[in-house]
Length: 450
Image (cartoon, rainbow, N blue to C red):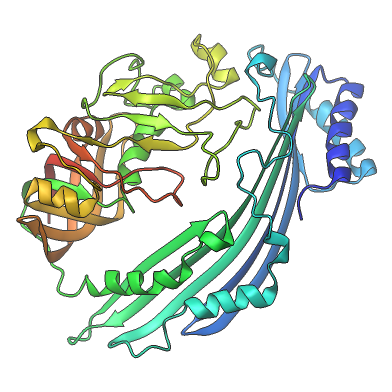
């Protein structure tokens, strides 16, 4: 179900149609995806779905004006009428001289087949409905003799995504990727009749790399760990954040480095480029082009080539994410439009001493001695202009490096700049199935309240 040679030809012809109708320049993006999903309820197939999506997006540059249109009708006759109407509509807009295609020298030249990063499972077309069904059922743990188990909802899915980007300056970029995922939510009841739920999931670009059979036990363990949870006392504590949810603390920082937020002064990192804003130990690398790893891309939506580069290095902001348009508005050199695959580098504060071997959440708790171990965030919000935040959390108290009572119904509050300046350690246990490679993190002086 990948993009066909006929669809590629139609995409190229769409460019020619645009210039024939009066556009000076144009970019066309063709997206095609297919997903099959098998969900289970209490060990039995509950729902089956098959979704196929195809859309063409046309970016037009007409008489100093810019507009974007999309369609899913890809016959030549339909496309010609679509392009003609789109060009006419574009002429009604106000002029915007800053709108332009990126300089061709910045664009990706080698993304031709779509599988240069090795993210396409060659056996995808051989995965049958029976294989999908058996994978979903075999991952279920509902048939086991599990004390207190009330319900189990599981979901297996596999997808293929194919994207082609071409423009009138000769750009031709393609990205093709498969994804196999399984997730399960388990609900149990304790001796007092209280219900607790736990969720776990796994994903891989290869079916052979999917660890679906391990998800039930992890979800069950997370549900059981909530039994007896209660609020802890208010105060400032050391904190370890599990790798599964640590990206919640990184994402607002990355968003604040985006051109749109910076240009609108809706960012707490305005004028931070080249400045030391965070702790010495905070280093984030954009590992955009990692072969075989989920989330890697060779180009952004403009076709600009990604690069492996420091975003933040030893606390110094090294990169803004500035697309071609924002470059003109901000009078800054363009980069890529967004971070692709950020990875937080391993680090330990000198105050904690050295630590050899794997640096996961358990090792961080051992280093810190006592504090709160956060395993999930329950709602909350943050202010993109100031960096202030307030998040509901769940997790555990830990003491002498060992996990103790579960806690919930607590708020974690603060400011992202202050928080990351209080970084004590960043681990090396990030999950490769996540698009943001954020390991378990340790901080000091974090405010918690019930």
